[in-house]
Image (cartoon, rainbow over all chains, first blue to last red; front, side):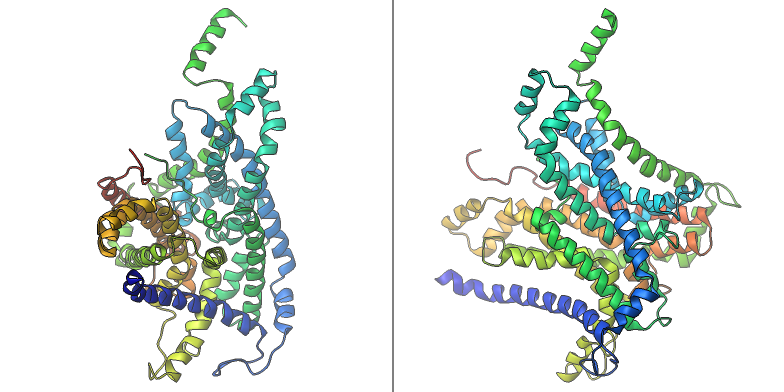
Length: 277
Length: 295
């Protein structure tokens, strides 16, 4: 009992800090949501009256249907390609020891450790040189740069925990690598692949810098369109920009709810697994 | 297949080289073609400016105070933000490392700002912290301030946006490191009569320190590449003209690819210097098992 009394001021401070943070977060999201429904909101606590017209206006003014289509297409392509490319590599890295393995591991770690703007600008220059930037293909290629290593890094520990004797048994029965992959590993890997691809989708929808640097007018994703409409403030009503922000927000939250059915919340963050030294 | 090639294949297979390694080729080609090659291309472009010698772009960057000072500005924003996020995360994670009701809900709420990203956070901060936003209303009506506090379009706006996206990130990482430390170590210390301060500073903190260094590095990388919030809630031509804004301006406003590549390379170099200093200090710390038991 004595320990409890000593510890409680610290507990109050900690919970207070958490409460302040959550209040700030609620204020940040809440003011966007309220503003997107408000008719006029200048010097009062809440808007004078409420309407949903800003959503219709945002939908037509910012041509959101093509933007959403592009976002969806980019995400699916990026997730699909990065799984196809990343999973075989993760398999070899998880199962095999070979010369140069550590170097290769470092190579796959680098794109995640570098800030996107640093490699995004040279990458965009290269993509423009080959005429790929400004189109969907350029956006997809640019987004693959962090996604392929991300899939490799999340899948490697997942593959490590699958018992290798199952594969060896299949090989004893005469299965070739292709069969081992298709008939043995793929069914076991489905949960991991699902988790990894959902995480890639979440990251791609939110990935601003790379898409911003490589997108043309008809290949913007939602977050880039949001940035452009915000930085050109004054042209459109603030409320319709906020309506678009709410659409983005809802899309992200739906994705998050889907993602959290398959992954632990910390997995969205702790992407670099510390190797025990 | 002749005996000689078969023997060679066997010898290679003994060292771990066999056809299965071909599975690595697609990923390696991807990373080399889309990451290593552009990086080298960027270095080459930065060394070939339209006029002047090979190093003219770098010389221009470092002699022009408007460009050079972006390094200091970026560090002045990202270092305090990363430090604050890590230091605030430690006591909170320490308090919450055990199991309690609502822990999963709490972590889910904390993941929200990370997934929303900096652009939406910037939009929310403009509304929330603006001169007529809820934050200033609370301050004015409670009498804590007699005129609205300016927190947007300056240093603080960017700082808050980095805290909102960076703190949950740091918190979840620190929490996962903390839960890897065996609680029986602390219990043993308590049995031997250590108070909470002794337990924290002599047992937990030394075991946590390497994890904190890694967390700091990752949070710093996030804060260092601050771009959308520096433009939207910051003052992109003044107090928050960070190095990524300088690089972007060079590439997309002035179309000076040499200067843009030079700025991007300088940015990467500065970041790597900070990270290697932190990781260098980290290697001085204890990095062993954090599990208890006989060992």
